[in-house]
Amino acid sequence: MNTKITLDMLTNESVSIKKQNYMTVDGTEYAIGEPYRKAYENSQKGRIELQNELEEPYLSATLSVWGVVPTIEEPEVEIL
Amino acid sequence: MNNAFSKDELSRIESTDDFLARYNIKELKSSIKKMENKIDTLFPLAISNGGTGATNTAGALSSLGIPIETGTFTPTLINSDSAGVPPTVTAASGYTMTMDGYYWRFGRFVMIYITLQNFAITTVNGTYARIGGLPFYTNGNFDIALNNIYGTGVTTAGGDIAFYTSGRTLIINNRMTTNSASWQVIARSFITLSGVMII
Image (tube, rainbow over the protein chains, first blue to last red):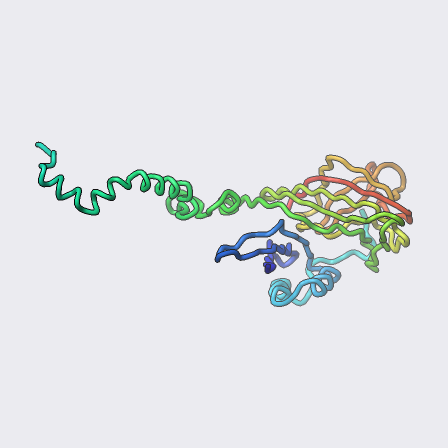
């Protein structure tokens, strides 16, 4: 069984990482179970989380779109 | 015009493979029927001919710009303070903790269901209660349309709690005001909610 990782809805602000397990039987690939997702945002915290949880080459691919500076600023104190 | 075969012709035909093939016509029809059942998979109608190029319903809808998908995610209790330290969450003593999230996507609409069971909060670590780990990034702030909610372990300035999405987190506020809720130390807690996100 292998896991396929998809960078879905990748923009300079966010990405939704989709992980799906597959099994190949007699040359035909079958999806096993349901996909698992987690969204990340291009903020300071979001970038750290992404680096801790996403492997290469998907990490570099995401960061190449996100650039070197976060595009989402987290407020010091949240005002609602 | 007479198309009937002469006796000689019939004799010649019956001695050939063509004749045998005629007797196998029933089997051939059966094979064709089986092919018909798989024809959409084997030969998807091309986009240039009005099709979607997909081999199944989900693929067809996706090709039309309406992706459908069901899946899971792992909701987590977090704080949105600048320090970013989440509350300390453990299993309630004597119970099995489950933190499960499920989603059903149809285009830009995503129905989510979150069930957090038998967890304890031992330290709060912040003042802005949030739920993280959402499967999609929301398209701007959007009040989540709650179908049902049950929750403990959250304090507000008074009144019930309400949820709305912001980016990839679920913000928990007082339902009647915009005051943010905060987590509270609790020995055993539950949160269950469902709603729709716009992505």
